[in-house]
Length: 140
Image (cartoon, rainbow, N blue to C red; front, side, top):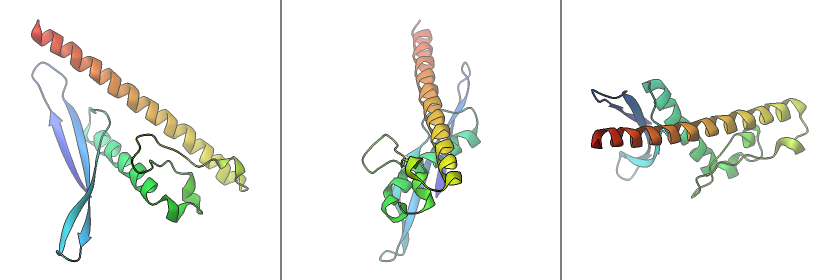
């Protein structure tokens, strides 16, 4: 995995970071790494670390969705995942789980993930309004 981080700066406005996580796989035929996927941070972040964390989280969701069939009978089935070709995450229903500790952990993960996704969407919306306001100021 390679991170491509960009710091956006402007003399009048707050600087911010965006990150793309580039995931490669080894190709035996060409004896080289081949780009398999790119995962971007959802919202601009004020720190590089937060931006990298965001992009990594998006990669985790995609790869867990991609390999879910292999993991659906283990404890990882309760992690959030993004099925191939979709933008919305899903999670296995933990209410049928017999292990009470695992059930409570899965329910906690669901709440935390939903709160994180809600926060990321709100951040992206605030950033959009901020950029629109900056464009209006520049035009004025």
